[in-house]
Length: 179
Ligand code: IMP
Ligand code: MG
Image 1: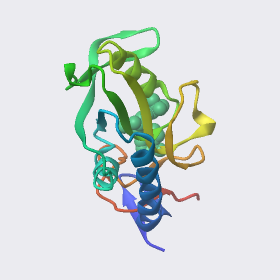
Image 2: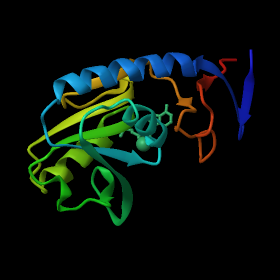
Image 3: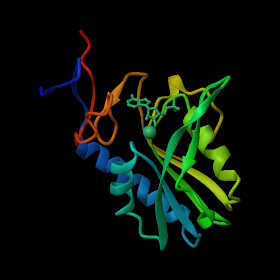
Image 4: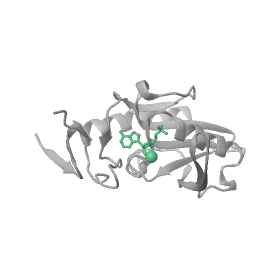
């Protein structure tokens, strides 16, 4: 088995790139059917979702747009921790069907924050597509319209996800080797 050392931790392959690609194809087929005829814009959330967004988008057959957003920390903090501001968003989403593309939904706090900010731009509707979902960590009630894979509450990396900046380039998804 191929073990990758990233910083201080050892990781092993958890989900192969082939499996990920199959899951994404299935998700794209659903989206192509569900959102046919709508004015759709995909919003990839950087950095983690770039690989997922790229693989999904090339299988989308709708006439649609894609753009990428980033969350930047505010200088101040709130009672709930650091508040993050969405950057790169503009009036392009007004009256459109927005599909948020996330790499992973863990507690859901990030997603909740993104959706609250997007609503201010008055899209027609907001859908969520996430490659990975950790149901055991989830604390929100937001509907996840398209979920690639549900995974346990373990730390994973690869396929766009990082561990302190490294590992995003790995094609497969890895998890920490349990000692
Ligand atoms: P949430 O706000 O708790 O849902 O966390 C969302 C963000 O945390 C994701 O967009 C990732 O950047 C990061 N994250 C959560 N779980 C993992 C993981 O297992 N590996 C790498 N990053 C993760
Ligand atoms: Mg992320």
